[in-house]
Length: 552
Image 1 (cartoon, rainbow, N blue to C red):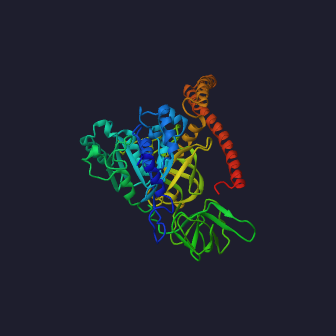
Image 2 (tube, rainbow, N blue to C red):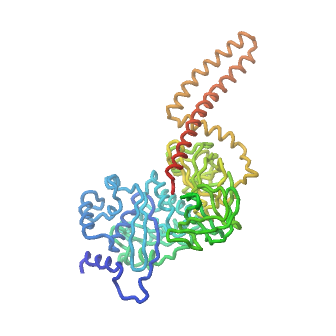
């Protein structure tokens, strides 16, 4: 039997109606979402391409195109470059790297899979975090020649941060170290020590050669010393852990107020947590007003019960002011409502965090203006220790306090990814600058929502930084140039005061005061002008949302 015939039969076996008769009908296969991650050139794309090829997900014409592309773009010499099956962007093929997240689907007799191939370069870490956010399991690749690298540890920390608790460490390129068992065992021991604090519930180690297929689909004769299952068999047998949510009540973030005519008012959204039944008592947050569920409508019609994950429209028995971003929750179990959050941030922007700077925060369907404090600390990704920090640069992870212009309902990320995960957006460029995770600490309540000492000063400094821009910006350069003229003007003013009063102390005090206050007044003027511009932009955005139904 040829390889193409074997792959064709594998595909046919996966089609409905093929295979042995089953009186009970086709059995649904479970779905596993996983991510491949690791440092640059560890073989992530090659591994996925090999799996797609071996499971019959590559048709003969696609394989022919792959052979042609391998001769043109490949990095494996005369061999087929399976990475080209997932690296489809022209820039990816030209450079031989992964830039964007590539999602691929494949299936076996035991299970269906959705895999996210993510980039290894530091500058694309945010793309890796995006792929990890929906994964049940992470396959972390390590080059057997290089061992653990900084990016390997950073990716390990990020997958733990987004709630992934099952990890497969695939030690790749074993063929380049002579299939040496000692090399494999050394890397396993080093990785176990390095990630001991990350809270993974299961770590499996598998030696592979993605290019040659060793231990990917079937056991490798070259590594007879390895007694475990090949990678695909391990993925097929992995039990998916239940959702990390430990919240006992129901939560429905309102995405849209559905009012087709004066006789109907419904509140639409995806039920994030728990279950809802007609007649349940619910509360609306942040207002706290209560009511009863009157009807539950779904795309399939009216039902009496809905569970997490369903798209629903609910009606209440009374008139309550509810708008997009509010939460409809079980009256007996209410998330915290606050204008202040303790959170961890993964900073993804090339522009560092401006402590006290203003950003837009989006959590579930809620949006609020946010002021971010100076970091309490950042995380050293090589040791996972907390270190002092005054800002967060690209790919840094740190703990901050965030103050909001309105109260929103949240839960710690460890209890609910839906109400514990958020993003920060630059209000000018609309760039997503950070992924955020609500910490276990109780947020500061509105009744005691006092600012931390120094937060007002931090806000002023952050506003000035955002106004004048980074060190190499035109605004800051101009301000520095003007400051030189201010020094001369202050000295002249001091000289005039001395000529009039003949008191040197008074003249020096006036000159110093002018020297200090004049730049602050200019900065405040610039900040005020920028704030007015931002307010106008925000009003335009709000009007656009109201007209276009953003997020529906």
